[in-house]
Length: 129
Image (tube, rainbow, N blue to C red):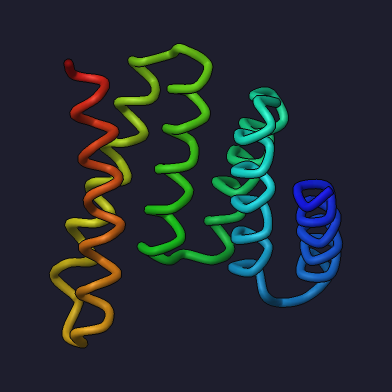
């Protein structure tokens, strides 16, 4: 089905980008795989991909990638029932958002920033209820 096709495409992309000088693309592929695994409720696989994305950040430092990585890690912990770790990762994602906010100047980026920010604040709120 579609999830299987999406997973196969992400794995191919990961294989390709892992052999190039584009580690940021490899981070994105790992994050997509993590989210696909979350949807399929394969939490261990989701966490494995999210942690691999986190390790790749050392080679592709980017506040946007860091935000998405921490947010995805938070989702994996929350899905596994680990509210403490989830809140910690969501807080890290929030910190990355706040750092990005100071650098934004283009209106389009500000709109995308606002969309991402809502999701992380909703997650933090849900865990603190």
